[in-house]
Length: 173
Image 1: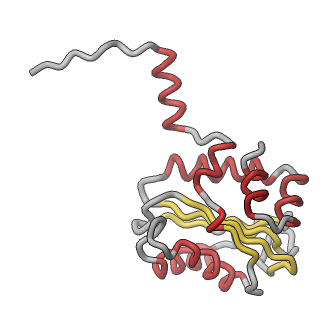
Image 2: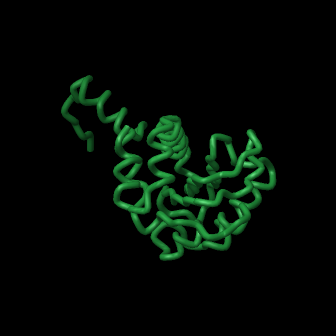
């Protein structure tokens, strides 16, 4: 049987497409929570990756934390995710990730991440994505970078000890 759908207004269609395609700056905080923010204690990049990925152990984000940790470490061995400016963004896309998410790690002492500028990392954003979440994954990564390019926001995040404040800062741009 032929179904007749009401013709969608072009503006509504474009708005729906944009909503499906893009993650706005304030939306990035929907991909994390205070449970995924941690003052990291580890002193090397692989231990930091384990520490942050373990925050997803509740199964809501990932059904196999060991596979996620392995993928993140493999990615890190290929090329450092220390992008400079005190920031590292370890990331992986694997089948066992159910919900695109990111964790935030803050190191007051700094972690050697083999960063492009050779400086220690104080802010680690660990991104976990499912294999079929490519568009949202790229959009999320781009928007995280846009937020962190703001030196004031980045420094406030690093200095903060309040997880709610960190979420507010991440969503403020």
